[in-house]
Image 1 (cartoon, rainbow, N blue to C red):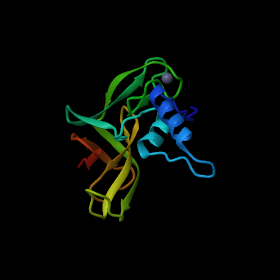
Image 2 (image 1 turned 30 degrees about the vertical axis):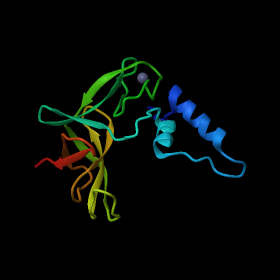
Image 3 (image 1 turned 60 degrees about the vertical axis):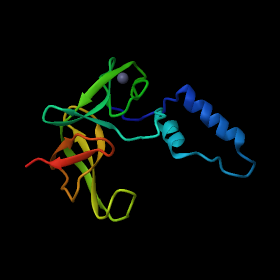
Image 4 (image 1 turned 180 degrees about the vertical axis):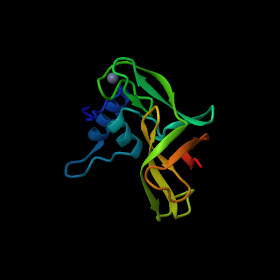
Amino acid sequence: MDKRRFAVLSDLTVSRLTNAVKRSRPGRPVALIPDLLFGFMSGVTSADPRPRVVAGEGGGRVAGRRCTACGEVCAFAWPACPECGGAVEPAEFGPLGTVWSATVVRIPVPGRTPPYGLAYVDLDDGPRVLAHTGGPVPVGARVRLVPGDGDVEVEVVP
Ligand SMILES: [Zn+2]
């Protein structure tokens, strides 16, 4: 399957991007604030680019979208299907998944004391999401989403 993605720009994103270009000066780069850049790439203009995790049976569930035409799933509130451009409907995914890739971060960021683990997790019935793991986890480990606000968190399933 062709997994190329395309940006779906909302009217708000186009307007903000246009204004940023209008304010720029010759020879100077256009100042793009992070959420505008994220919005440009994804079509999602939220200031918080993290998937939303809600409490569900057996653990957390990612509140995302499913395409009504091709069945493509995504972890964000896209306005249209990133695969075919079709209509999307709200859908929840998880709580179980498999670690696709993982690393240990040794750079301090606000709210996180290094070292801490990060992993891309393929949810069993949904999209791939970036999640905090607490510590190192092996590729292929089975994990469960932990419900909560903010960062997506997973715990290893024994
Ligand atoms: Zn689709």
